[in-house]
Length: 122
Image 1 (tube, rainbow, N blue to C red):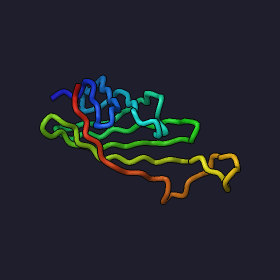
Image 2 (image 1 turned 45 degrees about the vertical axis):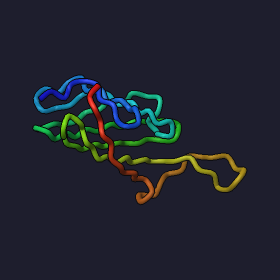
Image 3 (image 1 turned 90 degrees about the vertical axis):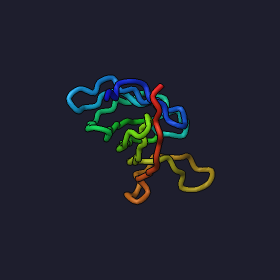
């Protein structure tokens, strides 16, 4: 089974796997979600696969701070079903209404977001 190709999730985000040799994954990810800290950039991904299992990660920076995303999933019925989590180092926030927003480090419990995506090969 080859993982190489273009994969789109339910929101229109694109995963491009360019190499899957020797159990490794290489490529890029570009989110379609404008409210994502990764928006507007194609971040490199790297990871591993074995049989129907896949895992890959990416890190990036933006005006709202640094972040890392990790995906783990299974290939089922031609779809890549994944669970993911994002770790965000900082977020923009104002001290009070009318004050300018500034980057502030996030507490660990607020730094993590998790969800699931389904990717289909296009």
